[in-house]
Image (cartoon, rainbow over all chains, first blue to last red; front, top):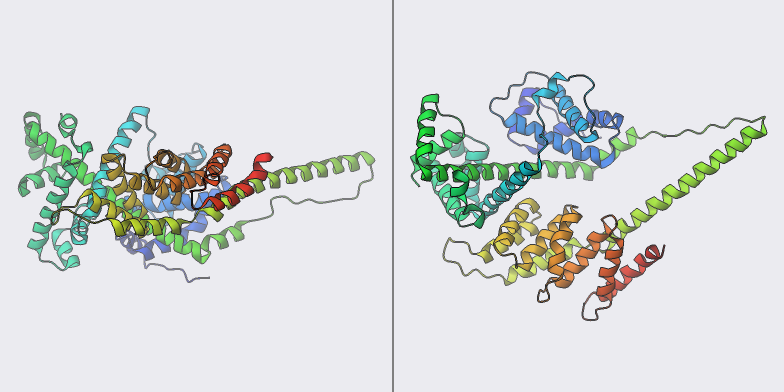
Length: 198
Length: 283
């Protein structure tokens, strides 16, 4: 049996999850997968469905942790349990027999009407355009944009991570974004900006 | 665009303006259509960057998941959790009726078991056929061959469509499926006739077990008479039919047409697959 990876505290584990460290994800699996699997089996979810559910759970948890306003107000296991329960209720189509306070902390996807779904699909297509062009940028450009706009790190921290000066990060970020903007604007899905903006 | 102007838009979108600033900005938005357009563009750019980060996160989680799976982490768990679901006890019967009921019940259980295993075998068979005949390595090699033929004619620093396709195939080759798929979709949308982009969108869907989506994309490619990917698209289409419900007849038709085509280099393989598929069809 592999030795479980553990962190000093939930807070340090959450910080590592925020940095998206693979070891932090592994620790999450080793500490909580069994608990979630048991909960799932009781609710009739089995096999690879449990694995898929846990993957979704990790994703939701990291999204939550990345929120700058997130404060850990309960034990990590409580959060994991609440997310798992929400996901299981959603998957099995069952309603909660009694309100679970923690579950409200971690809202899941809402259901969409047909129009909303169409709009969402269209938006997804547009976002895929950005993702596609982003892949064409040189590695440094992609990384500076990722750290700035996804990780939302302060300029000084980006400079430290990438070994640049503060001022160079500022210039680089602006140039890379400008280049991406120009590329994206050439795509047909971005020709309707005027209509969408009005 | 002016750096300060962009920063202001970003602060508006990130909701980090003071209320007074926000009010002024929104009043300006009402007046200035160019500003509205710029805000819309930045909104999409930032959301796209967010999505790219999210995809990277999913990939990291997926890698950890696969590593644990390879280690047998989930299998061990299933083993511990699996318990015999049904325990049959037998006691001596004094009454004939009870014996009869018992025998009838046993026969029912037996019939159920035979039915269950027959059904299970049928589904396993299609899956096994798929696993036996789907060779992702062939598609990777094909992607490498295509990459070698793609030469950029773009000016320095400005990627052409060829560059984009090359990058997309390189990403596919490196198993970065989400990024490859996003880029291929961009290419396919601008050039729906591009069979290579369409084909690899289908292949990535197959790799990620989205067979219905793969069928949607591979079907048109399999009908492009002038495409070098036509037959391979048809082959993969047949395999996808094997993995979707109620499409066994379509799978049969696809492999039959490939087996009957002497110019299709792999027609012997199609025949072999068809022979394994035939007993099922007769049933």
